[in-house]
Image (cartoon, rainbow, N blue to C red; front, side, top):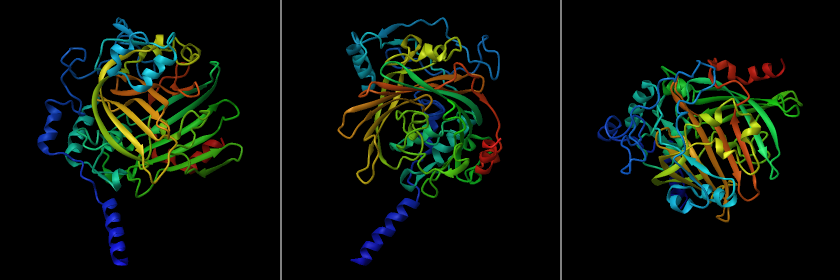
Length: 452
């Protein structure tokens, strides 16, 4: 019996170490040049004509754009809402709404609405991303029970997904440029509509996306992330540093935090999973930054399927610097008059907590835009199976690079009538690409920055 047990354990460890097949055949990958877009979406529109065909996306800056570092202006200012979804007519569109959207329409019948605009498939990426995605399709594999990627670089790793965790990896490493800086204003809103504003500067480098990179050169790091709190004074100077790993079985996420009161940087293994995010008043877990990030090992993942859904898209209006944070953040929910929803096809993926582990969110249902692999909506359930929280991500196309990027993320607590609005920079400089040497994200350099 001892020998049998030892053999079973050794076999289990071997299975974790070996790649789990995820790559597709050359014939299937060839669809990325015919019926599918270069990153795996359906090229054709829908039968009703309400979703158009993808024709390459938005790759030219409009005349209103003044160049790198200036505000991304709206190329679709002539568009007007074609209709508005409210509680009164939501039954007509129920099959295209998430449970979180339905809950918001029910909870705020007099103020919550969804203006629906013409669908514009504006998503586009550099040719290098398309070329790399084609190679990944026939080479990329999963390892470590889904907690590692093998033979993937630069592009979408799994453009034709076969298992539930693959779309999540696509979201985590989707192309957002090679490195850059953004300002992130975060408002935790109370039931009365009051909020405390936390301002963060975030410097990010994506080694996975850099030109000429290979899996061997990565040193197992796909993302470097440095976050500095600049406001309010009680939190200012707090620094979080993360090295996100490609093989999280070989080495989990590396994380450090600098506390200005203690004047020292320490390893921070709690910067992960359902530990509370900085300055979020308990409304966001660490793995809800960028809608979802980090290890996936606490959930069992499955692809539910694809469907049409109303998701935030081309959100240039609410991103405008003509509006202040107070114009966006209101009682109950953000200012829905400034939002733009479009009908797009989405992948629906569910994650359920494994019985052998824990997470405060027992189940999450993710809706991923097929054209970008951006998670657009998340329905979040508690241990009783009740809908607890709901996430939404508003994005724009950075047409001068090109790539798709979030400009506003929300987390609504449906049970406690509070919410978090984050990733806003309406009163700050525009997001911009900025080169960083790898040494910039070394813990010793963080210590130097903190003591300047």
